[in-house]
Image 1 (cartoon, rainbow, N blue to C red):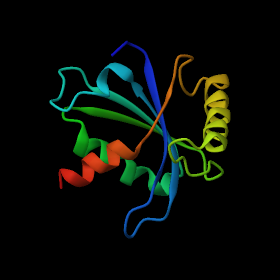
Image 2: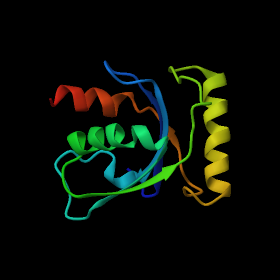
Image 3: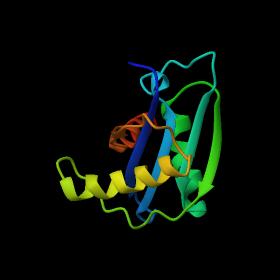
Length: 126
């Protein structure tokens, strides 16, 4: 994987949780690592403060090693659900990423990826 940053926009909805929109920024070189790393994963979560813990726990279950989390409490509930191929949803997500880049919340070379894999892996490892 190339170096840079990966930004994940997704929707968590599991039993007992309310649907949660969130934006996560992390180094792209770490996104495929399940064995852990000597270097800590630096994770920025942009979401409603109430839901940050659930998102962080999903990362802890999937990514081995040390994780440093920074929380930015911004309500992103205006992002629609992002099923694969939903161009309107992707356009709305791109608007939020543009906002985050403009205000230096995430890097210029961020890309949009699905958060479904992260959550599926977290559930499988339980």
